[in-house]
Length: 68
Image (cartoon, rainbow, N blue to C red; front, side, top):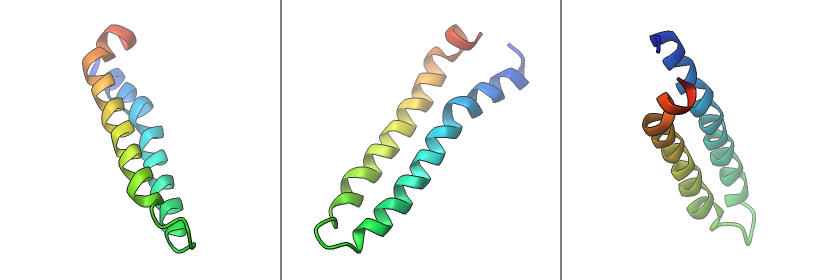
């Protein structure tokens, strides 16, 4: 597998997850100011981080098998 292809697959897998994390942080920041929604950042942001880590693990462990 070429290095260019490897970098592309990392971007394809992790790019959307990084965008998801950024959007989650932004929405959690907005909802933190709304009464009754103050606990959202403590639940949603860690879940988005876990998804990002799972995506990285998925790409690292099975990337060559699936993408190669």
